[in-house]
Image 1 (cartoon, rainbow, N blue to C red):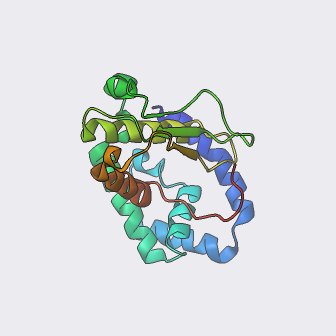
Image 2 (cartoon, rainbow, N blue to C red):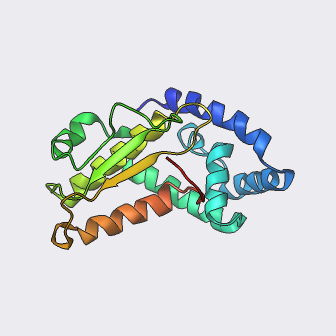
Image 3 (cartoon, one colour):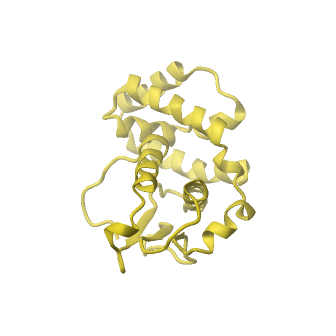
Length: 189
């Protein structure tokens, strides 16, 4: 996935964010930047003000916790390399139809991810790689001024025997640690 496309998509988020944050919140973003230190060009793509704001929101604006979480995310990105996952790497897993991004968006333009709980996958490693690919792809395709993705879970044909608790635990871990978002109350669809 192209770094330039990600940078372009984040520019619109930055402009919107600058208007919506208080001076205190902007100061906390600066504090986080100081705590995480010097970043490579590749790392800085994932440390925009909008990204740092999401980490801060997820940690109730606690600068220390948000900085630690962001450092862990950068380490994970360096090791896992989610931006390097190509379609060819996940095509066989995608054939199961367990998770996909349809060719439509929600009314407000948010990308949609659909997960079918009754579809079986080949292996946990491949399933996780496909999940991360779908997340990265959805984020890459966010319209300007949009920071949310809709994740729909289809429980048709669901049974406890079809649940992979390892998969559930790993997906929860990845979402909580590496794709933070502030909880919102209200109608999202």
